[in-house]
Length: 146
Figure (cartoon, rainbow, N blue to C red):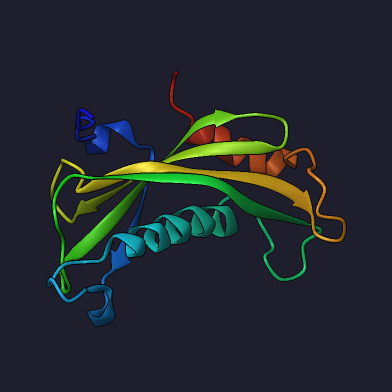
């Protein structure tokens, strides 16, 4: 399978600092592959909370991950300083597919990139709901052309 091209910072609309932790490294001395998904989750949810107004504790609407994937381009290790790049690839009535990439601070090429899909649901019923207008507007700000 051919390796996907390395995205650059220009491919993303929003950036969040990420602090690596000692326990992110595995026995091989680099950040373990599963940790990247935690970074993705943190980048997306921080944007939803701080910019889009998602109330993770009391809100009637929550977001469930239904799909994710990651391409690895270069190893990283604690104590690397990182930044997560975020964009919206596709927005539908009740879901959004994000593009997420991890960058070393000050570097232009991503060390990893992937996608992360949320479906917005009613907290009480678990049924999909329309993305609220404030959230939709925040997601549209980071939308990239197809």
